[in-house]
Amino acid sequence: MGKNLVETLMGAVVLVVAGMFLMFAYSTADIRPVHGYTLTAKFERIDGVRLGTDVKLSGIKIGTVSGQALDPESYQAVLTMTVDSAIKLPTDTVAQISSEGLLGGNFVQLVPGAEDKMLAPGGQIKFTQPPVNLTQMLGKFMFNSAESSQSGAPKN
Image 1 (tube, rainbow, N blue to C red):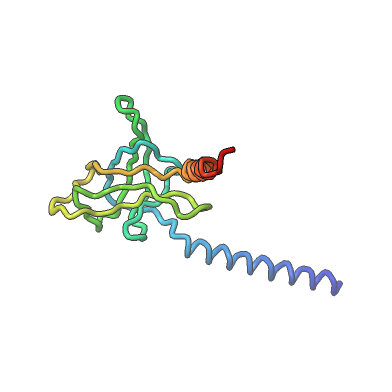
Image 2 (image 1 turned 30 degrees about the horizontal axis):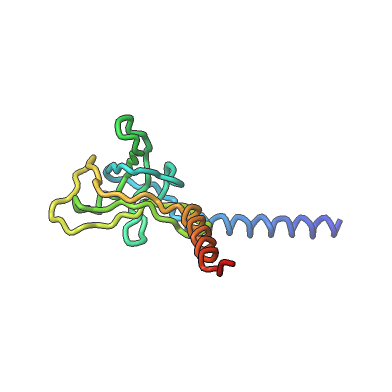
C-alpha cells in the first residue's frame, strides 16, 4: 500500500512540474495574435515563411504573416502581413526575409525608411529582399575554394 502511495505522489509531482513548464513556455513564447492593419509585399522567394510567421521591427514582434499568394502575372510571391495599429511605417520601408540562425526559422524584418508619408492600411511595401539561401552560399564557397586550390597548384 505504501509503495502505491509513493508512486502516486511522484506521478502528481511530475504532472505539476510539467504543467508549470507548459505555463512558462506559453507565457514566454509571444504567440499572441496581432490586431491591426494589413500590408502587402511582393518577393522573388519566400523560403521558410508560413502563415503566422513573425513580422519584426528592430527585433521586436509587431505583426504576423496573415496570407500568401502567387501573382500570376509577375510570378512573385505576395505576402499579406497584419501589423500592430500603433506602428506607422514610412512609404520607403524595406521588407526583408531574415533567418533566426542556422537552425532557426525565418521571419519578416521591416526596416523603416526616412519618408514623411506613411503607408496606409492595405498599402504595399515596394522595396523587398528575398531570403539568403545558405545552402547555395556554402556550395559557392566550397566550389570556389576547390577551384582556387586547384588553379594555384604547380603544374608538371
